[in-house]
Amino acid sequence: MKHLCHSSIIASHKNFVADIAYIPPTINVDKRNPSGGKFTHFISISEDGIVNIWDTRMVDKEALKVTPDFIWKPYLKLDLFKQDGSGELGLSRILM
Image (cartoon, rainbow, N blue to C red; front, side):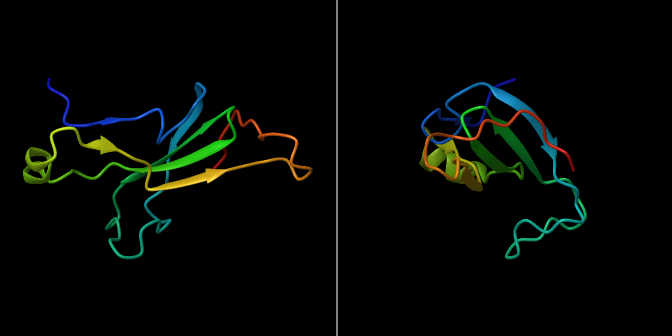
């Protein structure tokens, strides 16, 4: 099986991923392009304080031909920091 795209360390987590969970289809993540009752997004967390939401829907293969070095980036990225500004909040589990 040949991969179609990959994610970059610059655009994703900088530490190991501690947990991954699919977001239930009843939660509308993308208002412009609803999931239609399917599991289309998942969330990943890491000890680097980053929460990423990824869109798993198919990428247009014609767009990949135009950009052969296409990098899969998170749909939404949240950086969590301590309130006193002393560093990141490390996460280890997702509860949904």
